[in-house]
Length: 208
Figure 1 (cartoon, rainbow, N blue to C red):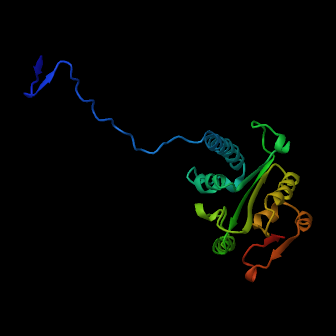
Figure 2: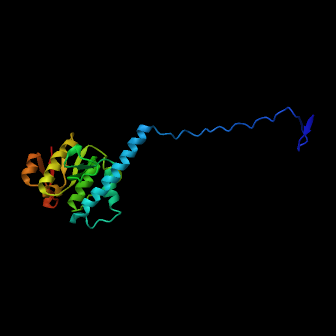
């Protein structure tokens, strides 16, 4: 027997209502490759752990004590994210994640334009060097901007090991580096003094 519905149409008891149209999800999949996700997590962990260690080391040095928390963004976080902070451990690569670091090097690989910017800041006596986020790895001119270590011997070892990180191109040293190690160490590195115009600009060493 036909059953009359509220809209006035009639359907037999044996007739079933047509199923509602299926809703299709056309949004792109957000699944991340597990291997890629693991790499991203490892990088984040490395940055968090390294940030704390380096920030504590900076706090112990008079040349960084006047920096604000906001300064850590461009002095530390941005070079860390671009792999421009090389950290040395007493046991080398065998050292565990909780090991105290022996020292660290802050460096940049810059374009000719940024190289000029660094030289201008050196001439003006600006320290620490201020770079934009995109400046840290903008070219192939390598600058060693600072080394933080417990003593002069460790500083010399960090600089010597750093040469293994920068395998191509010349290495220019910020004048502060020339004050952290003795002249003999710089000579062994093959550092060359870049003449300062009218003796206003502090000497910049260039290691080949």
